[in-house]
Image (cartoon, rainbow over all chains, first blue to last red; front, side, top):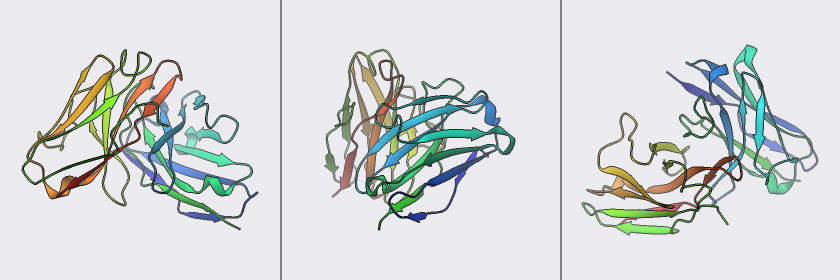
Length: 120
Length: 110
């Protein structure tokens, strides 16, 4: 079974750093793109960026370029999303999801989500 | 302001047929296929329709998708109470070089 399991919820203060993870199993990790999607409280889905774990080729949404870093460690089949200095406006649910062998496909499956709360 | 445009809400009574529209442009829906996601309350999104009109295994045939030009639609027939959810359309955008989403449509079963 193809599965993406995300790290637990986090509560952080503004200015702190954070790295959340997405552990993949049940398929060839290096063969499929993975994306990160933000959902702010009560709002819709926003694409943040995508990565190909095989060669770490990464594309960021213009809205998130320079704000986050997406990476992957193929030795442990895990993708990451990280911030160097969190803001209150980063409070949201973050989902990882698998794309196809080419990026212009559909997201399936999705991880269960990681809730990030940034508050002083 | 989402790249793809959906109505914020839709509603219907049990057994009815409802449709949800998704409008895009020549850089996204026009040249690319459309996918739909269902997000039940408090859960992660789930793939509902891919490649405009294909259903993943396990999705009832009450759900169907279509695309014409730069617009797409999701139709739900025989509406059931468990269909109450948020629905999102999505497509690859050639200008942004990434996937884009609609703002989502909240479906209420009256």
